Length: 319
Image 1 (cartoon, rainbow, N blue to C red):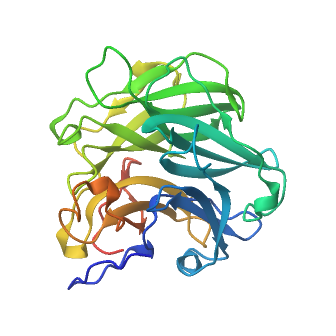
Image 2: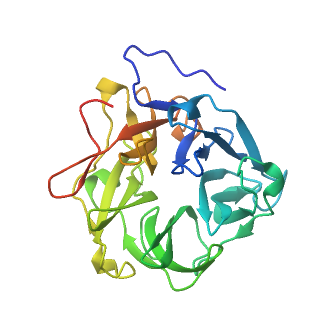
């Protein structure tokens, strides 16, 4: 592990050091499971603990490692761990060894009860979409009996780096319908450095479907936006989704939080309080020539509060 640079103020939100794109499950038979991108971008890891705080020091298991060359031999990004119909699935993105940015989406599956056991995981399958271009950051959720797949992708003919798409799933490893674009970066805070909408995460509460996403370059301009749809709406209709006009989570120097992004939702040990797990650096700017290769994006956790109208509040006075 590369040491994080020293800093003056505390980092009260810190959960797991040097784990970007963090994903934390709700407790499954008393255990929270955590995964995320490692700085080397070369493997998928899983750790587990009976408490959120326990994830910080929990031992980590490597459940898949990229091949030395060829397909999937490039960057391995943003794994997510999901329990679906009694089986575990990890969705992740990977490039090729001769083109690390030829990013496609893959899934591995395990029938074992403990996702930390490497013996249960099979070989990756590509989860294909009608587009063959740069695609990443997949998540999945079930709503009213239908499972959905939600991800980021570059689409030919749209002059942005990535937009957000949703599609129904026929199974945990395949789509069951055509993708629908539900968001593309257009607002000033979404196009700083790069025009990006990526890293979606889903929370269904208070009669609505909320989707957080990340925008702009992955330095301290990175931030979290919010999409909202009514829970009764057709989620496959782009008109059902409304984008909040401002980011809901952004750089905040007083808690050493720079460039927050790519989060996931879980629930606290009380079984009621919603938590948002995300990554950020604890200093402005970045080390090296490219923020992508600065290893010090740390996983953090923040308790949500709620407005009277049922919308989430991410910026709270204290963690």
